[in-house]
Amino acid sequence: MATRSRTSPSTAQLAAAHATEAPASDGQRPSDSHVQSFARGLEVLRSFGTEAPTQTLSEAAERTGLTRAGARRILLTLQGLGYVALEGRDFRLTPKVLELGFAYLASQPWWHAAQPLMEDLTQTLQESSSAAVLDGDEIVYVLRVPAHKIMSIHLGVGSRLPAHCSSMGRVLLAGLPEEERERRVMAMHLTAKTPKTITDPDRLLGVLGEVRRKGFALVSEELELGLMSMAVPVMDRQGRVVAALNVSTQPQRRTATELREQCLPMLQAVAKRIGETMAR
Image 1 (tube, rainbow, N blue to C red):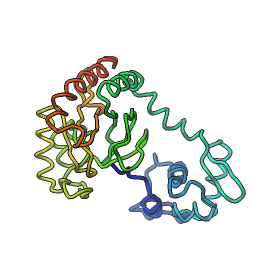
Image 2: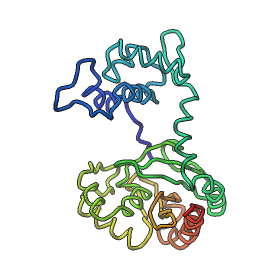
Image 3: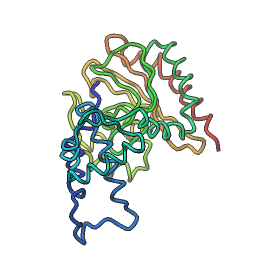
Image 4: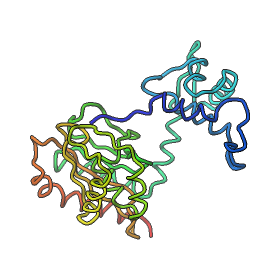
């Protein structure tokens, strides 16, 4: 299963439309509630990653579409706040950046309770388990307990995968109100990750309707060949889908029927217990 990284071209393209020093035209002028300097600072932070663990001032400016002067002000501000460090001519992120992501995780009412339950689930089934939330057209991993490596690359907290061809993504999409679900799917770019990936929006909507009726999603080799996973929703006390929980395996380890019979009841039980920990 391949993690989708946030690559620099997409960040630069998004930033280039608004991050120049020239004022925006009336039709593109940010609203009064939009703090452009703050938005640019976030773009600079997001420009760091696997492909750019360190950046010079010029590289950061190029990747975000900022001028050198603009990038310099932001990087020096971030350095003063402790979020980046300067080594020679290269800037790099510091561990303090993790505080931003952990603040989100700590604010989720179910997150702390989920970890030990998922550890027990993984130990019992001897299959990796994960939890994720929906963010646009992607899912974002917020917990992962690996049993053994079955994917082509490493997945961890913060990893992103396309929602349309992942089991947790389908559970989360199925949990949306019908009109919103249809609107999102019809607007998605349904990329084929394998020859088995569903890329027809009408067919995907049909599958999502079935997922909603059955209460689980089983996806076999649509995200990556040799990977099969099953997911169920985590619901709060009002019945709203707040996250998804899955187990993943390989077709040669378990058949789809075995996954449903051996893993689904336990997966549903853990998801229910997680949901019960949320305050009313």
